Every structure is written in structure tokens, then in C-alpha cells.
Image 1: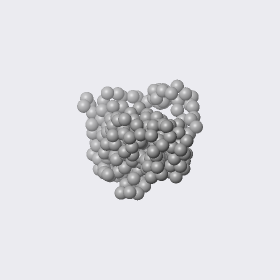
Image 2 (image 1 turned 120 degrees about the horizontal axis):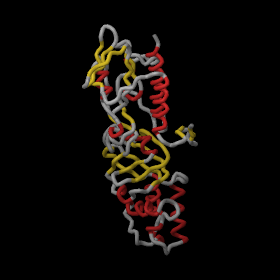
Image 3 (image 1 turned 45 degrees about the horizontal axis):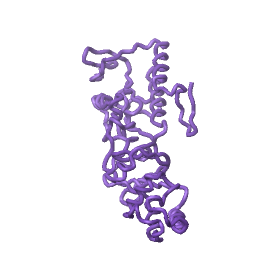
Image 4 (image 1 turned 45 degrees about the vertical axis):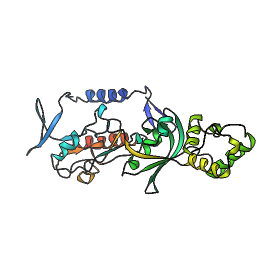
Length: 314
């Protein structure tokens, strides 16, 4: 049984990934599939008739082989480069590998100050001053940088080359001019308040204080001292708070691999290798990666179904 979220994502009603594994395992048992575990394949040899799969404890002969090893992302959950090595050993080409759907590291000191806070924000990736990608949604501040679904969504482009900056719009409901006027109105109406409270009721209190500090304003000064230039600076920061990206949290934390075996070396209709008849590949071992939201899982299911059906045909 499944449940569908408003955004279209479908999950087991149990909310447990093991339920998906169990359904697949029971289906294999019903079909008479023999399952071998704890025997990692180290080499696939192509013979005149079929293949020989070699592991440390022996070997196994097969008429057809499907390589479905996944990618190198998520090392602690089984991510591996094995599939790339096996297919390269049979003449296939692997593109440069990196990862995506991963937390980003930044040297902006605001990250540590905002650790644990979640915010709904617009996210823009700036490369050489131009927009390379954008998303909206939840951003989570951490002591090392930025996380959350909206960050995962743009991580691929944010990591494409050095010198990238991620800009956050922390108040999407208003534009910069409207926000500056709101702050000036607050200065006129409540001049007795401190600058540390100038964003009160608009963003999370700690976020507001960090923006004031980033603008170089004394938190203990009076809101009544706020002028138009300073209000515009504060509004600009809230609408375009920049975080230089210095790296990511690595393959152990990444959800998806960018790169893989060239798709041109496989038939898109059958998933069979164009170089090695009888050999199939599916999922993340191939050079395909998608956005956050289940697209990579869908590719795994769809390509796996294609490979399985075609490999089973006599």
C-alpha cells in the first residue's frame, strides 16, 4: 500500500524502505529466482557462449547478465564503483564521476550562527555572476553550510565548478523595495526598539539578528536611527543572502552519482549493450541522474524493468 504526498511523491504506507525490498524479495521467490548473497562479483568474463561471473569464492555461468550495481553515492548504504569497473572491463567507457543531491559546505560564518534553523527560501546558484540554477523550498542551516530539499535540488550545479555562490531569498513574499519600506515604517512607528529586532515577525529571530550583523550594524543601536540606505542594504541581504560554496559533504552523504557508463553504448529500448550482446545495464551505473523528488528511483525502476524483460526473452 502506498501514500501520495501533495508534491506527487509516492511512499510505502509503512514509511519504511524495507517494505519495498520485501515486496521485491517475495516476488523473486514466487518467480523461482535463486538469490546469492555475500559473493561480490569481481569480474565478468565474456565467452563464446554467455558469461562467467567471478567472485572470490568461485564463479557462475550465465547466458545473460544485468549490471544493476547502482552508483558510488551513499557509500554507507552500499554505494560502490564496482559496476563501473565491471562494465569498463568489458570495453565500456565511464564518464568523470562526482555526486549530487548532497549538502553543501560554505565558509560564510552565518552558517554556524544559524545551525539547526529551517527556512522557506528561494535558492539561486550564481556562477561568474550569472544564474546557473534555481529552486524554492526548505533550506536547513548547519554548522558546515546548507542542507535541505531546496539545496539538494541545486547541488549538482553548485558543485559543477569552483567559485560558485548560493544566494538565498529569505522573504519571497515581498520584493526588496517593499521590504525596505516596511523596515523604514517600523523605524518610524517603534523607534524605541533595538536593531536586533528590526526583522521581528518577518524571519526567524536568529536569522534577523544574523542579517543585522552581516550588514555591519550594531544590534544594540536604535531602530529609530535606521535610514533609507541602511534599510535598502538590510532588504538586499534578506533577499540575496550569499553563501560561497567551498565543497560538499562527500559521497557518503550524497544520494546520487553524476556521471557513469556512456548511455550511447546501450540500446535505449532494451538496455542491452551495443558492445557486448547479452549484457544489460540499468539504474545509476549509467550516466543518468535526475532532480530531487523520486526521479532517480523512477529511472532505476523503469530501466530495470526494461532490462529484465528483454534479458528474459529467448
